[in-house]
Amino acid sequence: MSEAFSSAWVWPSAPLISLIATGVGIASAAPGLSRRAGAAPTTGLVPLSGGLLAGIALFGVMPELAEMHGWAAGLPMLSAGIALLWLVNRYFYPVCPSCSHTHQHELCETTLHGFALPMVVAASLHALLDGVGIAAAYQESAQGLGTAVVAAVVVHKVPEGIALGVMLRAALRSRWSALAWCAAAEGATFLGALLYLLAGPRVGGGWAGYALGLAGGSFLFLGFHAAHGDWKSRGASALWLAAAGFAGAAALQQGLHLLLH
Image 1 (cartoon, rainbow, N blue to C red):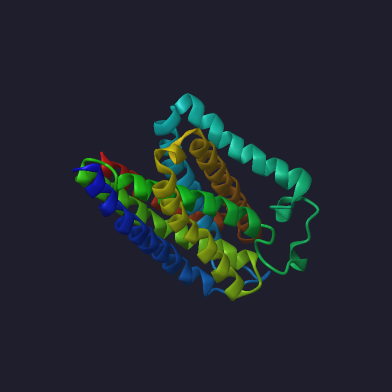
Image 2: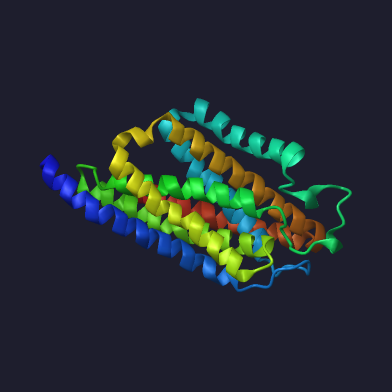
């Protein structure tokens, strides 16, 4: 395939597929946005989504980091994401105030108050790199591999969108605010595709690994604390729901890995 033909084919295709992936993510978030926010006991979606986030981080993000930088560098990158969010939570911004022993949960206006900002930042970083992956796949010389990568990214948007919708709805008082932030976070997929098409393979350099590590570490931190907070109010049933979400994300990610290899 000539360079001119490849460029002409990539430009209309990658943005379109990235928009489809964005739509899949937002549509997947919709069921979670319909639940009522507040301090009342959750319906079980919060710990389930926490498990989904943790599964995405360990079985989706971590293998990507290992492929980009090796396990020896990938694990510290993921750990750095956890450590950074812990430091922010501890000294700058109360990401998880409900984790404090002195916290009075009955006074909360939302179930996951404090989660919205770090959740949107982490999801946006992850979505941006999804868009980069879509555009890069369309420049693969082997068309089959490119198609498989794109399909994997789109399918991956389903559990990501579910977790994002549930957790933002539980963190914000307004359903419309939660929807707007979901759309903004998932919309970064389209921006990532445009960024790659404008800047080329340079956007896949070392910074992408750090961004992915930050997103994955944030997913782990937020997923764990979402399940932990619900466990404090619901008991063992929250752990089973979190485990189900974790197993579901693991199964999906492993299935996508087999598809690509």
